[in-house]
Image (cartoon, rainbow, N blue to C red; front, top):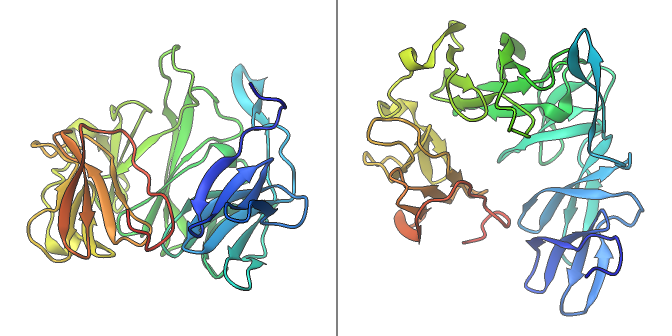
Length: 352
């Protein structure tokens, strides 16, 4: 039985053998198990939340606007249920580096409403401005990409997916005048052109009345230029060719994902990969795959460690979960049976 309303502390990351990062009372704190003391990552009273860790560096958000509720406020407009209000953060992206002389520094000038995704180089964020922007910030705070973001796109409902070669971005977007329960826009952007390539308006996502989750477009890159999109639970939707902007039914145009040439592979640390498949370096034979015998995607559980020296995946026959060691070019059976989600914990260079 809890003696107060405060939530229990949540373990997030081990900094040293006896020092762990936790979130307690809406703040990131360092707990020294050996000394038996706890100190805040930020000396100020502002709440903070973890984005990711990289060895002894912690990237986090300093919240300048306290969140009172993460819920939405809906309203009726022209016979539709639309989004009226939601919590809009104005956060600063910060980095804390542990060591003999630990220090905390803000990485970037713009206030941030959301971090949509992070990658090896940095973070994809939406700025908290009157005219928001989609930015890519490096771990040193440098802006390397600046793409458009429309003011009527609800940041709180946006879903982000980078193409395998990192040239294109797919977004599931809720507009402020759109049916909250049944529609989203599919938006595809080009990083090279810094522009929107294609918008598919009002993708119908009406699901069962028994479904209590907020709908979003399910998106999967089938290659560098081919995006499959549909409902939450199944790809009964369509396939978009981003080069030609042509849209076709998924059942008629879905490519065989196994037909991959060497130049189509994308380097990821010690590995090469395409959608659902992974190789050790320049090997001809697969090290692992989540595709079945027909070349269909059966499991999205292929995840690389933050430094891309390791990979974990569910086997294509859903028989087991395996771990790949990119340095030793070896494969180890981790557990029998399949799992629906994999996530690497810890910083860069931390072995499993």
